[in-house]
Image 1 (cartoon, rainbow, N blue to C red):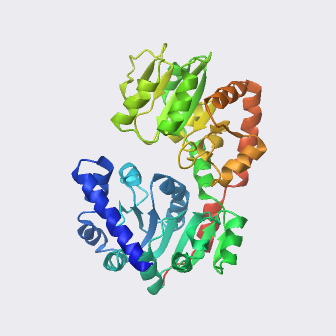
Image 2 (tube, rainbow, N blue to C red; image 1 turned 60 degrees about the vertical axis):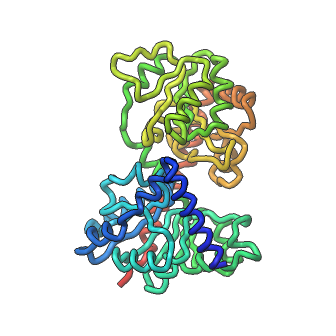
Image 3 (spheres, rainbow, N blue to C red; image 1 turned 90 degrees about the vertical axis):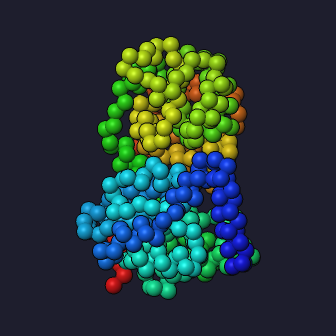
Length: 412
């Protein structure tokens, strides 16, 4: 199994190298971003005795880590935080955030890289956000007796760790000092697999969205755009979602306007979305103080980083991904009290079940279902009732970061 693991990493890296050579933007960022990592680490950490290392697969994992980072900085202001990313989608957006002493790509997982990296940055604790486990990094951390944790982790019976052929992968979980999981079902599943260093602390995403909802980031163009109409905000959409949305939008529901923030904001995808729409649309980057939005039905957000703050302006939210491989973050709009609609593939996301159960979220299977559900949710009294339900449910889950901070240990 070890041979297959190394072969898989080699083939993945080789594929990205080839794609990069042919101009694939993300592959290029992935390859080029890792060049010169040893010198960067040497230069940054040569006068540093230790750091608190957070590893995040991508942007979503970083966002859920922010409250824990903030709590650490508040309690231990002299500790230096190192953040690593696997994906360009996270690194390119958050590489300059002030919370971290240094932000970089995680070097490819090999024995030599793991040893050099850990010897250089000298983590006194390692914190992996949600998932993205790497065999050699975990082995070196364990051998050096560096306290190592995964947090906001959710486990399901279908995962490889719990299969008859998954023993090798399960060994990675055994290397953690503690696994901080989101729910009792995950704890039970791990303990039945003879992994007992497990504590239920909850989902750090609730802390993050609760904090974000309190921020006062404003976008004056929205008031002009919305006027006296209601606003549906569609976030993290994929082409499969956009086909369903466009079917409803092009019919022109009265007194309803739309903001669409696609998951991918490259020019080709934005153009594809524009071509789906028969109503008037405009890209956010094209809006100036002189732009008239009176006849515009759809604003397309063609950047990354605005979405979580846009939801406060909405009446209804649609969250993408559930017509594809998996649902994106529904907790952001829910934290603003919005009713949230999403597609059929949400079974890996416990929060979707929780909010469907209380009547604050709704799943649909096609464009007809979306249109019917949207019309139902345009009722202002229903929106107010749902807002109260969602706010109460969000508040119940806040506090994971504080629990984790009280439970982690530091290398002596």
